[in-house]
Image (tube, rainbow, N blue to C red; front, side, top):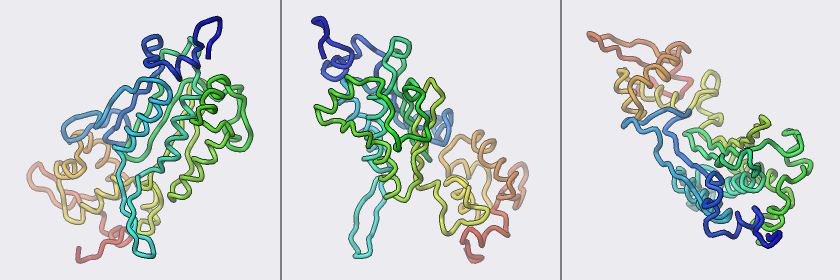
Length: 292
Protein backbone atom coordinates (compact mmCIF):
# COMPACT_ATOMS: atom_id res chain seq x y z
CA UNK A 1 0.00 0.00 0.00
CA UNK A 2 2.98 2.31 0.63
CA UNK A 3 6.13 2.62 -1.47
CA UNK A 4 8.96 5.08 -0.75
CA UNK A 5 6.78 6.76 1.85
CA UNK A 6 3.94 7.40 -0.60
CA UNK A 7 0.70 5.48 -1.20
CA UNK A 8 0.66 3.16 -4.20
CA UNK A 9 -2.16 3.49 -6.69
CA UNK A 10 -3.71 0.30 -5.29
CA UNK A 11 -3.59 1.64 -1.75
CA UNK A 12 -4.94 4.99 -2.88
CA UNK A 13 -7.90 3.44 -4.72
CA UNK A 14 -8.89 1.26 -1.77
CA UNK A 15 -8.25 3.50 1.24
CA UNK A 16 -8.43 7.11 0.07
CA UNK A 17 -11.58 9.01 1.03
CA UNK A 18 -11.78 10.45 -2.49
CA UNK A 19 -9.34 8.93 -5.02
CA UNK A 20 -10.87 11.01 -7.82
CA UNK A 21 -9.20 14.13 -6.39
CA UNK A 22 -6.00 12.78 -7.96
CA UNK A 23 -7.45 10.49 -10.64
CA UNK A 24 -10.79 11.95 -11.85
CA UNK A 25 -11.22 9.32 -14.55
CA UNK A 26 -11.00 6.34 -12.21
CA UNK A 27 -14.72 6.36 -11.54
CA UNK A 28 -17.87 4.68 -12.86
CA UNK A 29 -20.53 6.17 -15.12
CA UNK A 30 -23.92 4.46 -14.88
CA UNK A 31 -27.05 5.08 -16.94
CA UNK A 32 -30.45 3.52 -17.59
CA UNK A 33 -31.49 3.73 -21.26
CA UNK A 34 -35.23 3.63 -22.16
CA UNK A 35 -34.73 1.15 -24.98
CA UNK A 36 -32.39 -1.40 -26.48
CA UNK A 37 -29.77 1.00 -27.86
CA UNK A 38 -28.11 4.26 -26.85
CA UNK A 39 -29.96 7.25 -28.27
CA UNK A 40 -33.47 5.91 -27.79
CA UNK A 41 -35.78 8.20 -25.83
CA UNK A 42 -38.95 7.81 -23.82
CA UNK A 43 -42.25 9.65 -24.39
CA UNK A 44 -40.72 12.79 -22.85
CA UNK A 45 -37.65 12.62 -25.12
CA UNK A 46 -35.45 11.68 -22.15
CA UNK A 47 -32.34 9.74 -23.21
CA UNK A 48 -31.71 8.36 -19.72
CA UNK A 49 -34.16 7.28 -17.03
CA UNK A 50 -31.38 7.42 -14.43
CA UNK A 51 -27.87 8.72 -14.91
CA UNK A 52 -25.08 9.30 -12.43
CA UNK A 53 -21.34 9.34 -11.90
CA UNK A 54 -20.19 7.04 -9.10
CA UNK A 55 -17.02 8.02 -7.23
CA UNK A 56 -15.14 7.09 -4.07
CA UNK A 57 -12.90 4.21 -3.09
CA UNK A 58 -13.22 0.82 -4.81
CA UNK A 59 -15.37 -0.66 -1.99
CA UNK A 60 -17.64 2.40 -2.11
CA UNK A 61 -17.98 2.35 -5.91
CA UNK A 62 -18.77 -1.37 -5.82
CA UNK A 63 -21.64 -0.96 -3.38
CA UNK A 64 -23.03 2.21 -4.98
CA UNK A 65 -23.02 0.60 -8.43
CA UNK A 66 -24.94 -2.42 -7.13
CA UNK A 67 -27.45 -0.11 -5.44
CA UNK A 68 -27.86 1.88 -8.67
CA UNK A 69 -28.72 -1.22 -10.70
CA UNK A 70 -30.84 -2.73 -7.93
CA UNK A 71 -33.15 0.26 -7.69
CA UNK A 72 -33.61 0.31 -11.48
CA UNK A 73 -34.35 -3.39 -11.86
CA UNK A 74 -37.80 -4.84 -12.29
CA UNK A 75 -38.97 -7.11 -9.49
CA UNK A 76 -40.94 -10.26 -10.26
CA UNK A 77 -43.15 -12.09 -7.80
CA UNK A 78 -42.49 -15.85 -7.82
CA UNK A 79 -44.95 -18.38 -6.34
CA UNK A 80 -43.29 -21.75 -5.63
CA UNK A 81 -44.98 -25.15 -5.62
CA UNK A 82 -45.81 -24.75 -1.93
CA UNK A 83 -47.58 -21.46 -2.56
CA UNK A 84 -44.81 -19.40 -0.97
CA UNK A 85 -44.40 -15.95 -2.47
CA UNK A 86 -40.96 -14.42 -3.01
CA UNK A 87 -39.83 -11.32 -4.89
CA UNK A 88 -36.95 -11.72 -7.33
CA UNK A 89 -34.89 -9.08 -9.07
CA UNK A 90 -34.64 -9.02 -12.85
CA UNK A 91 -30.99 -10.11 -12.63
CA UNK A 92 -29.16 -12.07 -9.90
CA UNK A 93 -27.42 -9.49 -7.72
CA UNK A 94 -24.60 -11.92 -6.89
CA UNK A 95 -23.68 -12.14 -10.58
CA UNK A 96 -23.90 -8.36 -11.00
CA UNK A 97 -21.60 -7.84 -8.01
CA UNK A 98 -19.01 -10.22 -9.43
CA UNK A 99 -19.03 -8.45 -12.80
CA UNK A 100 -18.59 -4.97 -11.32
CA UNK A 101 -15.88 -6.23 -8.96
CA UNK A 102 -14.14 -7.85 -11.94
CA UNK A 103 -14.17 -4.51 -13.77
CA UNK A 104 -12.79 -2.61 -10.77
CA UNK A 105 -10.03 -5.13 -10.07
CA UNK A 106 -8.89 -6.03 -13.56
CA UNK A 107 -9.32 -2.80 -15.52
CA UNK A 108 -6.23 -1.10 -16.93
CA UNK A 109 -5.06 1.52 -14.41
CA UNK A 110 -2.11 2.71 -16.53
CA UNK A 111 -1.65 6.35 -17.51
CA UNK A 112 -2.96 5.50 -20.98
CA UNK A 113 -6.46 4.68 -19.69
CA UNK A 114 -6.75 6.29 -16.26
CA UNK A 115 -8.94 9.00 -17.77
CA UNK A 116 -11.59 6.48 -18.84
CA UNK A 117 -14.28 5.51 -16.32
CA UNK A 118 -15.87 2.08 -16.15
CA UNK A 119 -19.16 2.30 -18.05
CA UNK A 120 -22.35 0.58 -16.88
CA UNK A 121 -25.47 0.79 -19.04
CA UNK A 122 -28.82 -0.79 -18.29
CA UNK A 123 -31.00 -1.31 -21.37
CA UNK A 124 -34.48 -2.81 -21.45
CA UNK A 125 -33.08 -6.18 -22.55
CA UNK A 126 -29.58 -6.26 -21.00
CA UNK A 127 -26.91 -4.79 -18.76
CA UNK A 128 -23.47 -3.96 -20.19
CA UNK A 129 -20.37 -3.42 -18.02
CA UNK A 130 -17.35 -2.08 -19.92
CA UNK A 131 -13.84 -1.56 -18.52
CA UNK A 132 -10.60 -0.34 -20.08
CA UNK A 133 -8.00 -2.86 -21.17
CA UNK A 134 -8.51 -6.27 -22.70
CA UNK A 135 -7.84 -9.49 -20.80
CA UNK A 136 -4.30 -9.30 -19.45
CA UNK A 137 -1.59 -11.27 -21.22
CA UNK A 138 -3.63 -12.12 -24.31
CA UNK A 139 -5.62 -14.76 -22.40
CA UNK A 140 -8.39 -16.15 -24.67
CA UNK A 141 -11.99 -15.30 -23.84
CA UNK A 142 -13.00 -18.92 -24.44
CA UNK A 143 -10.93 -20.03 -21.44
CA UNK A 144 -12.44 -17.62 -18.91
CA UNK A 145 -13.66 -19.54 -15.88
CA UNK A 146 -11.71 -22.62 -16.96
CA UNK A 147 -8.06 -21.58 -16.69
CA UNK A 148 -6.50 -18.95 -14.46
CA UNK A 149 -5.15 -15.86 -16.27
CA UNK A 150 -2.36 -13.69 -14.91
CA UNK A 151 -3.45 -10.69 -12.88
CA UNK A 152 -2.81 -7.19 -14.24
CA UNK A 153 -3.15 -5.62 -10.77
CA UNK A 154 -1.72 -8.17 -8.33
CA UNK A 155 -1.26 -5.72 -5.42
CA UNK A 156 -4.86 -4.56 -5.70
CA UNK A 157 -6.08 -8.16 -5.87
CA UNK A 158 -4.13 -9.03 -2.70
CA UNK A 159 -5.43 -6.00 -0.75
CA UNK A 160 -9.05 -6.78 -1.61
CA UNK A 161 -8.49 -10.42 -0.68
CA UNK A 162 -7.20 -9.43 2.76
CA UNK A 163 -10.24 -7.17 3.21
CA UNK A 164 -12.49 -10.12 2.19
CA UNK A 165 -13.99 -8.09 -0.64
CA UNK A 166 -12.61 -10.49 -3.24
CA UNK A 167 -11.75 -14.19 -2.88
CA UNK A 168 -8.95 -14.21 -5.48
CA UNK A 169 -9.79 -17.82 -6.32
CA UNK A 170 -10.79 -17.16 -9.94
CA UNK A 171 -14.38 -17.98 -8.97
CA UNK A 172 -15.99 -14.83 -10.39
CA UNK A 173 -16.81 -16.14 -13.87
CA UNK A 174 -18.15 -19.52 -12.65
CA UNK A 175 -20.25 -17.72 -10.03
CA UNK A 176 -21.78 -15.38 -12.62
CA UNK A 177 -22.63 -18.28 -14.91
CA UNK A 178 -24.07 -20.38 -12.08
CA UNK A 179 -26.26 -17.53 -10.79
CA UNK A 180 -27.59 -16.73 -14.28
CA UNK A 181 -28.41 -20.40 -14.82
CA UNK A 182 -30.30 -20.52 -11.48
CA UNK A 183 -32.42 -17.61 -12.78
CA UNK A 184 -33.10 -19.43 -16.04
CA UNK A 185 -31.11 -16.81 -17.97
CA UNK A 186 -28.46 -17.12 -20.65
CA UNK A 187 -24.83 -17.21 -19.54
CA UNK A 188 -23.06 -13.83 -19.57
CA UNK A 189 -21.37 -12.80 -22.81
CA UNK A 190 -17.72 -11.73 -22.76
CA UNK A 191 -16.28 -9.46 -25.45
CA UNK A 192 -12.60 -8.48 -25.60
CA UNK A 193 -11.41 -6.20 -28.39
CA UNK A 194 -7.96 -5.61 -26.91
CA UNK A 195 -8.80 -2.10 -25.69
CA UNK A 196 -11.92 -2.86 -23.67
CA UNK A 197 -13.53 -5.79 -21.92
CA UNK A 198 -17.31 -6.03 -21.90
CA UNK A 199 -19.67 -8.30 -19.94
CA UNK A 200 -23.29 -8.51 -21.09
CA UNK A 201 -26.16 -9.87 -19.02
CA UNK A 202 -29.38 -10.61 -20.92
CA UNK A 203 -32.65 -10.58 -19.02
CA UNK A 204 -35.53 -13.03 -19.17
CA UNK A 205 -37.34 -10.96 -21.79
CA UNK A 206 -34.96 -12.35 -24.40
CA UNK A 207 -35.50 -15.98 -23.49
CA UNK A 208 -37.63 -18.30 -25.57
CA UNK A 209 -41.19 -18.35 -24.28
CA UNK A 210 -43.44 -21.38 -24.62
CA UNK A 211 -46.26 -19.27 -26.04
CA UNK A 212 -44.10 -17.65 -28.70
CA UNK A 213 -42.38 -20.43 -30.60
CA UNK A 214 -41.68 -20.58 -34.33
CA UNK A 215 -41.49 -17.14 -35.89
CA UNK A 216 -41.78 -15.45 -32.47
CA UNK A 217 -38.85 -17.00 -30.66
CA UNK A 218 -36.39 -14.30 -31.76
CA UNK A 219 -38.66 -11.32 -31.12
CA UNK A 220 -37.96 -8.75 -28.44
CA UNK A 221 -40.36 -7.96 -25.62
CA UNK A 222 -41.20 -4.70 -27.39
CA UNK A 223 -42.22 -6.43 -30.62
CA UNK A 224 -44.36 -8.96 -28.77
CA UNK A 225 -45.99 -6.11 -26.82
CA UNK A 226 -46.83 -4.35 -30.10
CA UNK A 227 -48.32 -7.52 -31.57
CA UNK A 228 -50.46 -8.20 -28.52
CA UNK A 229 -51.62 -4.56 -28.53
CA UNK A 230 -52.46 -4.73 -32.23
CA UNK A 231 -55.14 -7.40 -31.84
CA UNK A 232 -57.26 -4.33 -32.50
CA UNK A 233 -56.12 -1.87 -35.20
CA UNK A 234 -53.91 0.90 -33.85
CA UNK A 235 -52.34 3.99 -35.39
CA UNK A 236 -48.61 4.64 -35.26
CA UNK A 237 -49.20 7.36 -32.69
CA UNK A 238 -51.13 4.98 -30.44
CA UNK A 239 -48.38 2.36 -30.68
CA UNK A 240 -45.77 4.98 -29.75
CA UNK A 241 -47.84 5.94 -26.71
CA UNK A 242 -48.13 2.30 -25.61
CA UNK A 243 -44.34 1.91 -25.84
CA UNK A 244 -43.71 5.32 -24.20
CA UNK A 245 -41.35 6.18 -27.06
CA UNK A 246 -40.89 9.03 -29.48
CA UNK A 247 -43.31 8.87 -32.46
CA UNK A 248 -40.62 9.20 -35.16
CA UNK A 249 -38.37 6.62 -33.52
CA UNK A 250 -41.27 4.18 -33.10
CA UNK A 251 -42.33 4.58 -36.72
CA UNK A 252 -38.85 4.14 -38.19
CA UNK A 253 -37.27 1.64 -35.80
CA UNK A 254 -40.16 -0.46 -34.55
CA UNK A 255 -43.15 -0.35 -36.89
CA UNK A 256 -41.42 -0.30 -40.30
CA UNK A 257 -39.18 -3.31 -39.47
CA UNK A 258 -42.22 -5.22 -38.17
CA UNK A 259 -44.15 -4.52 -41.37
CA UNK A 260 -41.13 -5.65 -43.38
CA UNK A 261 -41.02 -8.89 -41.38
CA UNK A 262 -44.68 -9.49 -42.14
CA UNK A 263 -45.73 -9.17 -38.50
CA UNK A 264 -47.97 -6.11 -38.92
CA UNK A 265 -50.35 -5.35 -41.77
CA UNK A 266 -52.54 -2.41 -42.70
CA UNK A 267 -56.03 -2.87 -41.30
CA UNK A 268 -57.75 0.36 -42.33
CA UNK A 269 -57.04 3.86 -43.55
CA UNK A 270 -58.94 6.99 -42.51
CA UNK A 271 -57.67 10.09 -44.27
CA UNK A 272 -53.97 10.34 -43.52
CA UNK A 273 -54.17 7.92 -40.59
CA UNK A 274 -53.34 4.27 -41.16
CA UNK A 275 -54.17 1.68 -38.54
CA UNK A 276 -52.16 -1.50 -38.21
CA UNK A 277 -52.97 -4.93 -36.80
CA UNK A 278 -51.20 -8.23 -36.23
CA UNK A 279 -50.95 -10.37 -39.35
CA UNK A 280 -54.05 -12.62 -39.04
CA UNK A 281 -52.29 -15.96 -39.54
CA UNK A 282 -49.92 -15.19 -36.64
CA UNK A 283 -52.59 -14.66 -33.99
CA UNK A 284 -52.75 -18.33 -33.06
CA UNK A 285 -48.96 -18.67 -32.82
CA UNK A 286 -48.91 -15.81 -30.34
CA UNK A 287 -51.64 -17.43 -28.25
CA UNK A 288 -54.35 -14.89 -29.16
CA UNK A 289 -57.82 -16.32 -29.56
CA UNK A 290 -60.16 -15.14 -32.29
CA UNK A 291 -62.45 -13.67 -29.64
CA UNK A 292 -59.82 -11.30 -28.26
